[in-house]
View 1 (tube, rainbow, N blue to C red):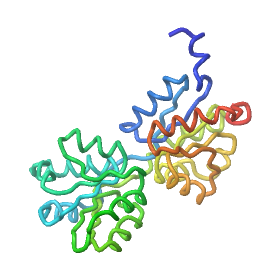
View 2 (cartoon, rainbow, N blue to C red):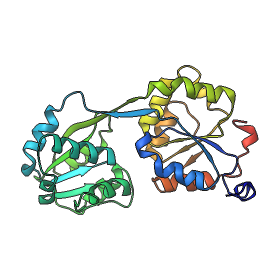
View 3 (cartoon, rainbow, N blue to C red):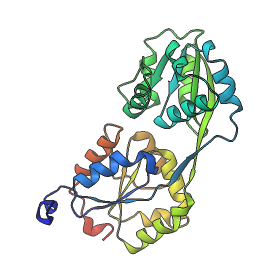
Length: 271
């Protein structure tokens, strides 16, 4: 494609720092590059096993005792399916129960394995799932919630208010990808970053761990876009100014949030 065409793309000239884990960032990077952006992929988190598999293994060994399994991320789906494989359990065991999934990426990860999703809320966060569950009788129902060790308590708390017994088990951990810290600091100090995208609270928290003192100041001239209100709230609570929040909490929504703020002057931030 010729350079003249590139100049007419909406994000031409934008250098965007993508903090999502490499294995999950492909669609976001592709969409941004298609619109002319130059993506700088420096993940701030790595997905690793939980400190112990004991609770997850116990839950999987007693899978038939649950009426529902709730997945809050594609990471959770992958972690559970990989652990089932390691334990020589058949993922088709999940077909015997009701499955709930937050967000299209989570649903897709399940459906790719032939696992039918019963409930997927219109709002891609815990609050949306709680609202969707209000149409179901959960009294006395057992729900398995495999997720990140450091996730919010809102979902299990609200499901228990609806009468369910919720078993929250750690399926994976997110930790700072420290090897990228120095590179990110250098990019920000050089002023070559126009925008940064955060796709989860952990990408925000770990960004500050990796960049260290001055991380918030370093973002003062950079456009900050968050994938949804939960991530935006985490950023604001840590003192980071948020310039755009995706209305649809997906990679596509995040791209739209960036394109919708083209009035932001790159000359005032990161150049």
